[in-house]
Length: 406
Ligand SMILES: Cc1cc2nc3c(=O)[nH]c(=O)nc-3n(C[C@H](O)[C@H](O)[C@H](O)COP(=O)(O)OP(=O)(O)OC[C@H]3O[C@@H](n4cnc5c(N)ncnc54)[C@H](O)[C@@H]3O)c2cc1C
Image 1: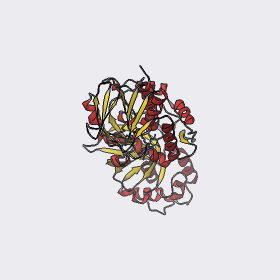
Image 2 (image 1 turned 180 degrees about the vertical axis):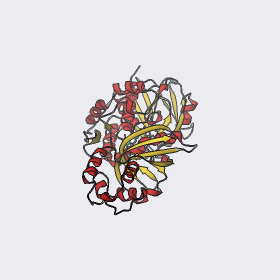
Image 3 (image 1 turned 180 degrees about the horizontal axis):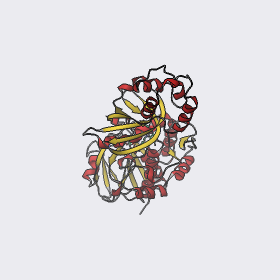
Image 4 (image 1 turned 120 degrees about the vertical axis):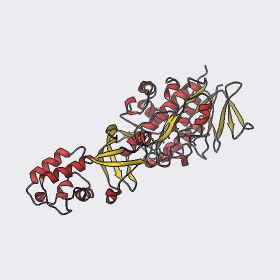
């Protein structure tokens, strides 16, 4: 019987364990935490955003989209939904295509995985840190805190996560081990993190959320852009739109000159212009006209930035002042200082390049019998369930391959 050791009981490791056990392998799952799925438990604000109807290779930031096409072609959204259903986790999608468990409970998802691991006979070694992975007689030896606690296994799946949110268990401690085994480690940086920016002028907007168009520039070069929900915060910006660009902030920080441009009316500018044209000569407050498409706290702040008094009426505003105000609302530029770091990031970029694993099996191209999955690999998706999809996808493929008997 194939003996498989799995380092890390996050979504990637748990899925790998279930698939390997289903192949008839004897599976041991190690984690430093007291419980399995510690990070999974806090995903989606406790609701667990499992995948997305728009999952395709193109949505991920990666050096090799063809790799992702292959892995998603083998175990994509439909396969994940079917596997979750089988585990007793039925799902539904929001109108935006974000998938959640019907229970809306990440805790219920973790419990279902824990029950399935138990039922599959997977041996759990919790509060157990794997400190080294060495070649052994029949494969590998996993060291637990020192050579005196050596666990021999034939195949190893490293599902130890990246460096994001270190308080939940993943601190990047396996990267030096993998480097010693011959793998490249692309610098690991925060991604899906809130962005720190020069937002003194927006202090009255803290907590305001709205859909925006957001573009990140280094000097004149546009590094990326997105449309999505944004929240003004004390430090800068949070919400999916800011977080989706944060990996680019991490990668291009240093040397200054990074800025975000915000379009606060990405979808309804034509309607606003029509409304203004209709009411142009009427003495309604300018803030009321702008309030037709913007949260109520935004117009006074932006009128102030444009040098227009709070109570000014639409009929009193000069054409060039109105255009200047609309220009600010659709393209204000804000200096970027960085991200809020690993402590506040949902994932990390960097790690082992995907070109160093086989997309059919997730087996290392450098070390036979070693499999790498989830956030250990240099793949990052946007907010919306893409990262859990990749963790489950890569875990499933590795589990099927490592658990098989050849
Ligand atoms: C607050 C938050 C919200 C999120 N929400 C979503 C969401 O809604 N949808 C989504 O798609 N993604 C979300 N993510 C991202 C998602 O959680 C990750 O992409 C996913 O957990 C990665 O899975 P993984 O199994 O690769 O790693 P992890 O979940 O990090 O699991 C790795 C495990 O390995 C263990 N480990 C590490 N080193 C060792 C060692 N040496 N020995 C033993 N054990 C070890 C760790 O303790 C950890 O439990 C969120 C992340 C955070 C932080």
